[in-house]
Each structure stands twice: as structure tokens, then as C-alpha cells.
Image 1 (tube, rainbow, N blue to C red):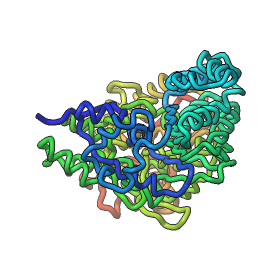
Image 2: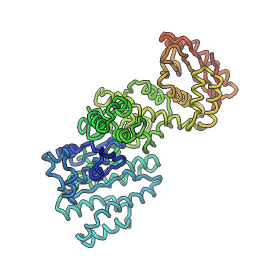
Image 3: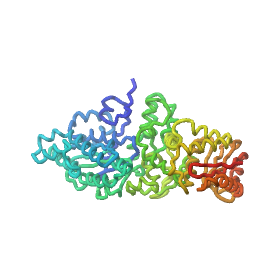
Image 4: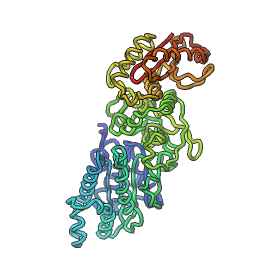
Length: 545
């Protein structure tokens, strides 16, 4: 009988005990032990095995239940190494902040108190050994009877009393350290959250004589966020680092082995198209969450992008600018995107438009195609799964679920331009905010229509602002099959609704006068529709020939 698939199980002991299929990542423990840095931060996209690896470290190092935990590493890589003598040698604190999210700072305060209270309840056995002062502190934290200010030192307090109990320094594991900070940013209380967590982390991780080692995980590397500015003992390992490259995610060899085990090895090339493509340092890795789902359901579809956690990206795709649109267009056409990736941004900047691509990279929505130099990289879309997310997110924002977009694009590609105008007009009236279409925001219209063009991916290539003839056209939809029709669009906005038709004719004339069709004709396209599109708020007019 084949092993089961521990889908959604991120507790290492449970995976082993339930005899679930497990890709042996225990070499990570050996690397952690050999790593000389006192505090380590691992930044990886969500669902790439961060929590499972942290859980593995907890069971490996924890002095409590040492003998029982020893059994779960039987026949795994780490058991046969010199590093195994470190098994069960330290008290361990494992704090997961994965679910620490809140709409307001007041709610976050309550959530912090609850999270720390739950953590302390795991150590109630220590109460028997504490003096009355430490007992009082411990019980107040347990009962959530403390000011938030006092909780800043809660982890340091816990390391001290664990050290006094076992006479051993403490391993501190903090999973998804940035989850409450991202939540704070999205909901507008970032500064308050930053002030708390800066002290909360630094008191336990810096100049703490009870600390053996600190390991943190997160999605975004935040070096200058003020969060870790005091930590001179921190080593940060991201997807750009040349070490720990295969500790998270699955290598091709690991994926092939798993497909073979379940008798579906013939699917390797399809699986590669859909879920491979990530580059961590010099290793190419697959998305583990998607692979596990594929092993379970045997169906090629988007798994990772359908899980929660796309909020940031959805926010980003709402803020359409001309530059963003053009960059997305290039990515969809299979081109690389050259970007400066400093990795030293603070969180508030990372979540702004200027550093959008850095956020996309660290979150797993882009990957590195090529490293140019220390700070410059060529980025690309990793695989089919992520492509579906961009399309789906963009389309659902403006068209909801349903056939609206299908009918719109059919009208265009079948050259029924009057119907196309009618359907586009309806979308603008029903799905678009007045703020999007306010005066001077031509980029919005450009972005919207370009986004619709992504729907045609596969049969057509879309291009924006490319030189042709005597100038630069706004937008072209070019068929891959040259026997089909191409479309050239020029956009103009006006604040006078009476002039809509006049302005649309001007746009059409511009296409002809500046000979924007030259490059299409050179590429062998004979049938071309020229479209001048004028906008005024939510009203449009298309002149065409």
C-alpha cells in the first residue's frame, strides 16, 4: 500500500507517525548546526515548507521528550551524521505568527496577548520551579493580565526560566515573523506594529546570554525596516542566496522520485511546465504545495495560487500604471524584466509601487532568470500556474466571474467593432470606479484594455508603446498566425463628452498618418483593423477602419 499524502500537515512528527510521503530535508538540520551565525532568517514564498522545516528543528533539538523524538528521525539523512549528537540537547521555544493578523491595532494587541498566552501554556510545568516573582509574571502572561509593553520581553523571560530549569541555552524558533507586519501594513497601523515587534524580537535575539540559536522564517526580507536594525548577529538567507538553496521547495530529482513512487512518472514534462521554474540561488526548484496536490488529485491545475495569501498581489494589481502594464505585458510575452533588487528595503517601501517587482520576486510570483550583477537581475514568470493567477486576478477585478470578457474579446477578434464598443462601454459603466477614470488617467484605460488582451494569450501577442513607422503606437494585438487579423489601437482622453467622436477620429488619423502599421506589414500580417478609442470618464467612442 502506498504512503498517504500529508496535505496541509506541517507538523513534522505527525507526518512521520502517520507514515505520510516525506521528502527527506533533514540535511537542513546539519547545515543549520554547521552555520556559525547565532540568528538566521530564511525568506521564502508561502507554502514552500517553512513551517514544516521549523517543526522539524523543534523536534530535533528539544530536550523535552528527547527519546521519543529520537525515533522519528530513524532512517533519515541526519541520523547517519556527526550532527545527530545535537539531538535533544536544548530547550526549544517555537512561536508561529502565521495566523497573527488583524484589521485594527486594538485587535492585534488582543491577538498578540492570546498568542503569547498560548505559547506560555505549553510551559506550565515550569511553574513548580519558579520563585514567587517569576510565578507572578508567568501567571499574568498566561491569564492575559499584562500590558502590551510588558510583553515585549516575554520571550527573553521564557529563555531565562528555561535555562534555569535545564542549565542549557535555548533554541528560539519564530515562524512567519513578518505575517503581523504585513497585516499591519495592509490595514494601516504599520508604525505601531513595527515599534512593538522591533523590541519583541531584539530583546530575545540580541545580547541574550540564554540564547543558543535563533531561527526565523518569513516571506519578505526586511533588513532596514527598523525591525532588525539592532541585530548585528543576524544572517539573512533569501532566494538570492547561494546557500540553503534546496532546503525549501523540491528539486527535479525529488519530484521525479515522487511521481515514480505514485506511478505517474510520464507526467514529468507537464508537471515541469506547471510547477517548476523557481530559481533559489543556483538550484531550480518546484513548488512543493502544488506537487503534493498533484500527487493527491492527479490533475494539472493551479493549487498554490488558489490558497489564501494573494491579498498583497491583488492590491498591487489594482494600482494599474502604464509602466506596470507594459512590464506585465513583456512578462506575458515570455520576455525577461530587468530590475534592481536591493533587498534592503523597509517593509513599507516594499509594498509600494516602486518596489513592486521585489515584492513579487520574494513572494514567489516571479523568479530569477539571470543575475546580471550584485543588484540587477532579469526576472520572469516561473510557470503556468503563476500565469493563471495574474490573468484570473486581473480579470475578476474588472469582469467578475462569467462570460462578459469572453463575449467582449470574441467581438474584437471577429472584427465586430460596434459590438466590441458596446460591450466595453457596458464594462466601464458597471465594473469600473469613477476614481479610476478621472481626468488625465489615460494609463488606466490603456491598462484595462491591455489586461483584456492577456486573455488572448496563446493565439496573439500584445505589445504597448513600441516604435513603428513615424512614432510609437499605444497598443497592438498581433496574431501568431499571420493569416488572421491584427488590431492597432490609439487611446486619447478628453474632458468634454461632446468631443468624444471628434477625438476618436483624431486618434484614428494618427494611426494612419504616423504609419503605425509598418511593423505588422513587415511581419507578414495583411488584415489590419485601425481603432481610435476616445475616453471621457466612463464614456467611450471608437472610430475604426
